[in-house]
Image (cartoon, rainbow, N blue to C red; front, side, top):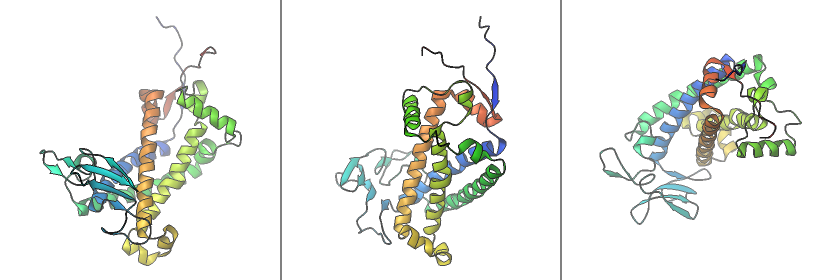
Length: 275
């Protein structure tokens, strides 16, 4: 029989953070799936102001000369048959598009449909993000919880946190209720760099918006460069989500998910000295 007292609960996430987290998760999912369908319309990326079928692309996904699928980055050609470039649809028919139907929204090829989904949830992302930023400035969430201290930015502290995470030695006790330095840097990167870049490069690709703010074309070096940066930021956000989910599983998915729904987090027991 376990006679140990229950671990204390800590109010970890305020309501604006929880609402933005789930709204952002939905928006990013829809934006990713619809964005992959939009990419299928022209599965090549370029740098500069211009790019078309016969221009040299730095990234291309499609059929290979041997009949399979491939991801071409610069001079490297990576076989991707069955996943990217050439795959079979739900009826078993071979298709030669960059991303398969189960990765895209809508699942059937529809550039117009994908654009409607993309624009709608881009507004969800922008308006939800603005509300979150305002609320976090008012309740001092950024200053209190996310802004790193000078001591946390010291190389020794950073390396120690990286080493502990690599060994899955996650914070315990009261420390588990606070953001560690790697979380702070990752969240600040997403909130203040990646998401704004996604929004600005998305606007740069809109011909109608170019007429109002042509400065964005100069800022990003042309529409094709903006498209490449947009794609790279999307892949960086996808990598962040994958790492975030892995850490949630490692830290305890039930406790972590409950804290993001109710706000209350049950603190893990302190690690024993000999561990």
